[in-house]
Length: 393
Image 1 (cartoon, rainbow, N blue to C red):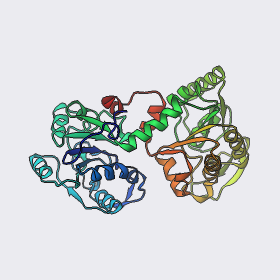
Image 2: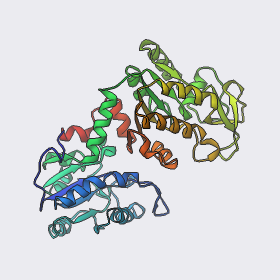
Image 3: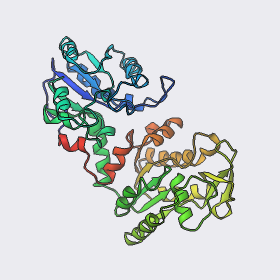
């Protein structure tokens, strides 16, 4: 792979434009989850050691080419500075002539973070002129933002047409781990997939049915599966017009001998703030909603994981934000952790909510690999070519 380690680049004194993903969750101006920031530290430290001049490009939210006060990267630059224990110069203006002269004044081994790249009009439209403009910020471009690489934006794809471009350390690790899942897979292999909508993940399910032995469907997606296969799901989160999609999944699973597993018992309540009680899926009342998987379902998932060599997890098993509905997610984590730490399985987890659950139960080191990416993670597994990867390859 065309990454910064295997190219033996002379980086001392070079201006390096580093694209990272610092789109972290925030509440009232405070960062609530730092996984994405911590993931990029090795690449930054490497560049500092090599005495490069580092210009960081990133974004938060979707300001659509306009300056939005609540979407400034200022608090994120402060957090990154704390984690690196190194000063970061924060450039609060959108890119102009002044930006170029300020970058020219950087000393070797120093870091400047530019304001939210999406405040600039040409970023999300992948404007050719803007791509050329930002390529002039440095001598070398490094993409270390796997989670943005499914976007054909100027700082991800367009810039690579005008400047020598390479992968960073984090993105290289990410691609290698996902390649193991897609091309060097060790069977039996199982997917645990959750989330609210089956329609957004239908392509990945259909693609992985051909390669996987088991697909375990949990969360809101499972409610949709249950409803369209004859079960009553009360007032649970559910998609009503997915009958054809479900038929397609079931038909394909038979064709490729992939076992689809859905919950047989669940934890229900009348509201998200409820206490929760265990019920078989044929006993759900009209005023109840499914908020977690039950003990029988957990047992069946354990048996599948125990008989797997590879496990991929994307999406929690229930509404884990309420401790009354966290047991399913917590138990799946414990089962995967035990098998991974005993070197029995190769385990990969990905997606924002999944990472939040892993961090809540302090299991980040319990997987072979944890991806902070959501959309890019799924699109890569779907077999799509990501614009940011293709541009450098």
